[in-house]
Image (cartoon, rainbow, N blue to C red; front, side, top):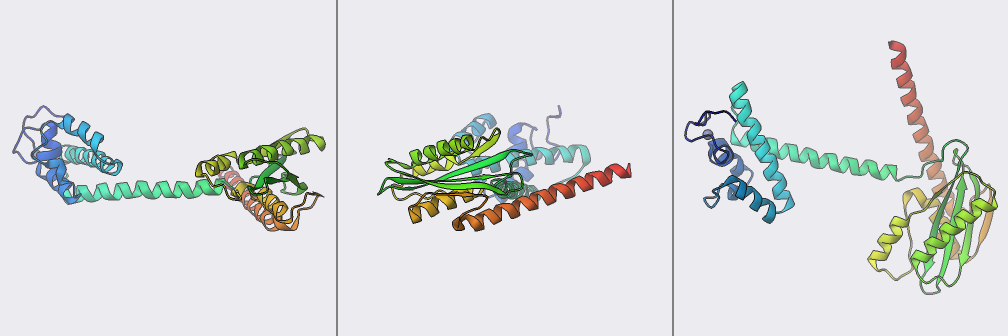
Length: 280
Ligand SMILES: [Zn+2]
């Protein structure tokens, strides 16, 4: 802040924090335009007390707008002093609104991208990946584990559904499926294998306190769950080599399609990098 005792924008008061952020006409106008006149109410006297009180009593959304508006007012004040640019209260308020909206839009586009990342991804190189899922019937206390092993080309090495009795609740069903996935890998003599389930979903299910037949569905693990659901429906155990059972064909094809898209995008990126390297 400059040493000048008077505000150079309005020449009506000393340039203290209270003046810059509350009393100066563009500041007053900004808060009014943002429908936050409570900021400039007569009850407020010391800036730091007001700020502390705002954070303690107002909603997260109001605190966010307050902080953004203070920042915008400070920028506007600096631009006036150093560049001679004079912004009105409505211009500052609309900057605040647009800026916050951009942040919200960014958050939702990041969220959408995260959902895409949740899709099944193929193991690298010569590794294999086993996905496991469980379907549970609370009335009969039966669970069915769905297991599928695939390679880096999304080709099926084997798929299996296994029936389990005396399972007391859904968490055990998933734990048993995980154990069976590891056992299957050992039986096949596999040296390096990735194991993928979805314990997070199970925890969320438990927190929901649903005691009904539980169906767990996560995109990355959809094939394993289709197998488990199919087992539950048919009440049978199956073992297929280099083949997938009918209930999981569609989910399997979708994983393969998604994987091919990823490979294509990666290839295109590599080509672009290659081209730009050649240009230099
Ligand atoms: Zn002023």
